[in-house]
Length: 256
Image 1 (cartoon, rainbow, N blue to C red):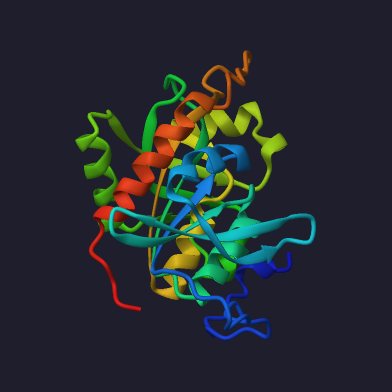
Image 2 (image 1 turned 180 degrees about the vertical axis):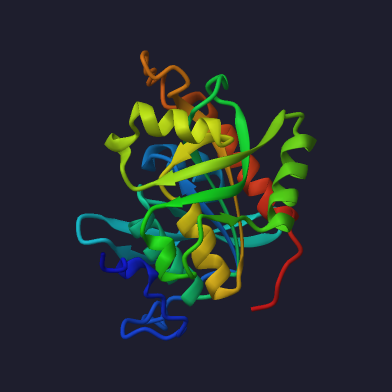
């Protein structure tokens, strides 16, 4: 059997294509990378009067790069697209234009009995996607940045939120979350499933920047014979955005 190309890792930081290709765009060191609908982000940012400083085109959609002033700090804010390849492409681009501290938040599916809208903190991600293997050598899992996760946990606890640390299953195959796989990974200690965490963490580690993420719970796969979409965590989105911003503001500022 031929070895998978995913194991053919090249640690050269420089690619033929360049994530810092647009020198006219300058991002702030702190970034909120939000997996929410555009309308959710617009509602949240309205009091901060965001300014567009650039745009990233994903061919089918343009993603504005926003700058906001909040409580004496200037931050970059951007909507994150679904799926590891697109999300990581944008994250790498943001890093190439000055971002050094990233907090990401978005929804996840649950493999165990968590209520909708709960906040969960991933500390390790299963690399069941392809993107992370272009940023780090092959391994089963990746551990998230412990200091960033602690900073997020402190913020959530300060807001009197119950926080549960979890291992998460990052997959490329939304419609391939089969009963067998769900039960297998649940038995291995995985409580959540999503499509980006492992790849984003790998990109940040490769580029030597600080990345942390937290989830709000959406659909439930806890009972594989009775899948429950619920309401995709809509009621938790504004709170999650606010907590992500607070966690970002609490981080020590890094010089550009």
